[in-house]
Amino acid sequence: MPARNSRYPEIAALLRARILAGEWEPGSTLPTLDKLAAEFDADKNTVSRAISEILEPEGLVWAVPKRGTIVRHGQARPHRMRGNLVKRNVATEGSGYSFPSASGQEVWKHHIPATAKPERLEDPRIARLLKVPVGSEILLRHRVTGPEDEPPFQINNSWIHPRVADFPGVAGKAPGPGDWLYRIEKAGHGPLSWMEYHRARMPSKEEAAELQIPVTIPVLEVIRVGRSALDGDPVEVTEYVIPSDRVETVHELHRDESAQWPWPEDNAAD
Image (cartoon, rainbow, N blue to C red):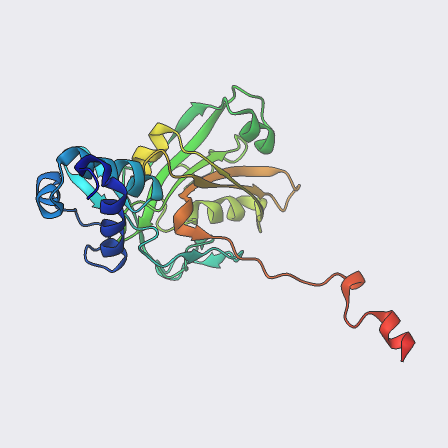
């Protein structure tokens, strides 16, 4: 029989199977370490190691101080297909937009108070995309949002170019998702066009805390650049930060003319 303190992989496997089978719903709390230790005839340190060294890095659970071990939405929930469609947000009956991977029919909630205030932009990548000097004071909209019945799905930081930051409705609380973008369009820059840049990276401690994930879970970073129809220059750059196990990017592949079927030489041989 294996030593009690070497059983943590076995205990992790048992807990994983029960989580994936739905014994504990996403958002619920696992039994205490004392109860799990008694159930598995193991000591608390072994159970803690199974959770912290295996289940938490896998993204199945998240240890929350003073709350316990929470089952995450992630591998235990259907993945959201991202796609590339910008939709009108019909749930709010407003003029705003829903970007991938929102459905356009959901009312997402704010997990922390939304803010919009001038901040010094020190990120050279964002500054380059927005076409402003590093160190410029830029209006920053900060949001942590997600569907009503789920923990935070994404962080979105929007840097607004100074030439449109003072437009009515851009800095204030929007009546629906993406409404502030419509305000920029209505002021003379519409219709906006967008380009996205995707990459995977590790979250900062602050991002992990806001998303309620361990720092060991990679995130998908999506940078969206909104350009004016007036002159083609950027009016906003938005950064989305999403736990990587909660989203998939989907792209339909198309054949270039050079890859058409059948191969012309096949016809020549007939």
